[in-house]
Length: 259
Image 1 (cartoon, rainbow, N blue to C red):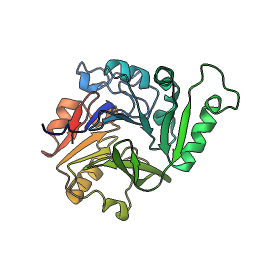
Image 2 (spheres, rainbow, N blue to C red):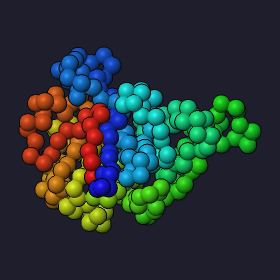
Image 3 (cartoon, rainbow, N blue to C red):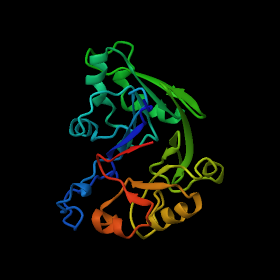
């Protein structure tokens, strides 16, 4: 029997506003294609042993889990502390209560401090009976998690240092505007490289745009490159997909890839 492949499922592929954007009537926001409906960016790793590792937990977490028929989270990796990546942590409570144990959260030290500040009731000496329970773990270098090895990738989100994550021959990077050369060395020739791409043109101070992504594709030469953290300015999924190189694709909510 062949070993089970690990899987990554995109729970959300949108920017901090999501798609459709409230009050917008552009072609993307009014599209009937489900691939143009984007929750805030998040991903779920299923390991060889069936363990579930969540990457980021934003405001759409509850609906993401319900729509994708997911019922377990064993650990959480956080890329950075912006609300669209952490503010859904409270919605882990049903899983915490069901399993009767705290959920481990892995992040940079700065991010862990912010999580305590956003959810003080989860860390109080005398906790409210319905409060969630989190175990915070500060990370910087390669570390074991459940049955896999996790390699943090240090990137910049404007002036803010944040993390991406590499697992086996897949790397997931969101909200980056630049990748230091020392970190690029970890990303050459991957089977799957996942990068944020906010729009086609007009440079953005905190996020990659499509020309930068295409340059990184030429430089890093992944077998497959998937775009996430996509805004409505990147265009309708079906049309934009046709404009991309053969190995580059728009991710969409619910897409699964095995690696």
